[in-house]
Image (cartoon, rainbow, N blue to C red; front, top):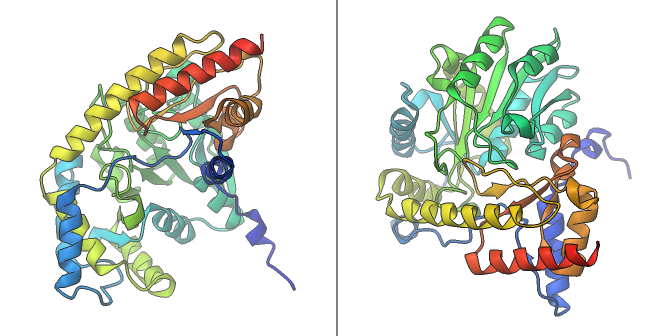
Length: 388
């Protein structure tokens, strides 16, 4: 049997591989604390569940328009206008079953074989994987700890060539929790406009911020004309299993992505879309409660990691990850992650799961209870003490 060469260019995602290994260990009776997966440990808020259930009872179980239900898109547009301070309408909105299909569709629509895409590194591996799959070249821009894991504009400028087609942003960022400043965003847009580049702005963590205000690059005058916003319900509203994402983009691109949707998945689940409308337009008390708890957990894990010999950790400004520097332990990223899982029962991800510039770091998700985080910190500290 023959397979295409391009299918071999797709990468897996480290979090799910580690999750499978951790689950196997648990099945064998071993204790594992899960700090590897990027999934809120909260239940979907009740009002959202009720809206989805009611939609099923009301018969919304059939095909929906491929780009999204108009009434739901109207709610999304209103949310985007309010949260980003921009002016968009239904023609700019596409609803898809999760953010990954939107990332895939945007790259398929805008990036050709031999093109170059500048991607954050360390960064979410899907950007690199899909770019490789398309026969294009992912060009890593290093996110440096000394720069709070933000783009350096001089680095970005040096990476742009005549083949560059797109710049990918993720702010707040996975895996570092770093956030681009308004000055960063203005500089990025200036370069994109100068070189006629698309900007893919993954804003899935836009509502999980702590000590700063979220800024979208689309708030920079002119940026909306060359930007695709990707956002969704998984992280903010604890709806990972509902598979809901939305994209904001120029009208012509939305028309192309509508056709892609027809040819790919037909439509996003109808009742799920009504749950999304409730999430965006309904009470936000649960979001505030979850974010307050994430903040508390962030402070516990950052303080705890900084108290461990050989480990230092910046305090992230968004998302629910920390990306500590573990070079002082004398271990590589993969060695650290393997030892902590296999010998200490703490699941985390090697920084290299997010690209070559992740060496010397690991990622912990603090989407777990304070009690479990404190126990994980103890296990890490005790295990490292035995390696001296």
